[in-house]
Amino acid sequence: MTSNVTDFSKLDSLLEQERVFLLKGDIAGLATLLGAKEQLVELLLSNATAHHDQIRPLEGKLRRNQLLLDGALDGIRAVAARLAALRQVRTALDTYDAQGRKQRVAISTSPKVEKRA
Image (cartoon, rainbow, N blue to C red; front, side):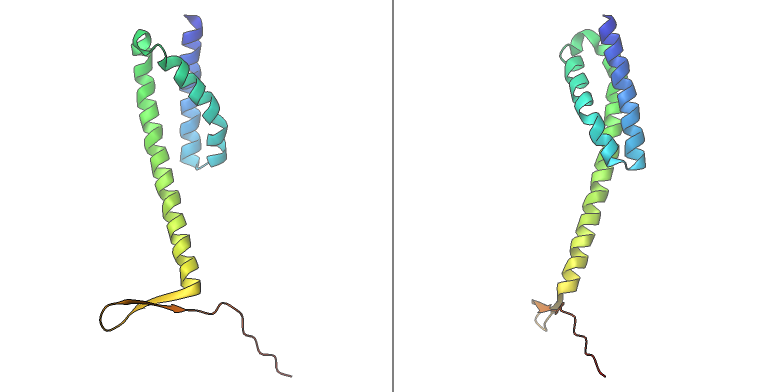
C-alpha cells in the first residue's frame, strides 16, 4: 500500500512539473518527463477501481495539462503554417484573373546583382 501512495505522490509531483514546463514552453523539459509519466499512469490505472479516491484529483491535473498541451500544439501548428506561407510568398505570388481563377506567378529567387566599375 505504501508504494501506491508513493506512486500517487510521484505522479502528482510529475504533473506539477509538467504544468511548469508547459507554461514556460519548455518542450525539451516535457520530453524528459514523458517516460516516467507513462509508466506511473499505466501502473496506477492498472488497479484504478481500488484507488478511485486517489486517482480523482490526478484526473483534474491530467485534464488541465492536456488542455495546456493542446494549446501549445495549436500554437506550434499556427507558427508552422505561417512559416510555410512566408516561404511560399518568397517563391510565388498567387493572383486571380477576371474570371476568378487562381494563377500563380513564379518569383525568381536568384540574386541579380550588377557590378559596375
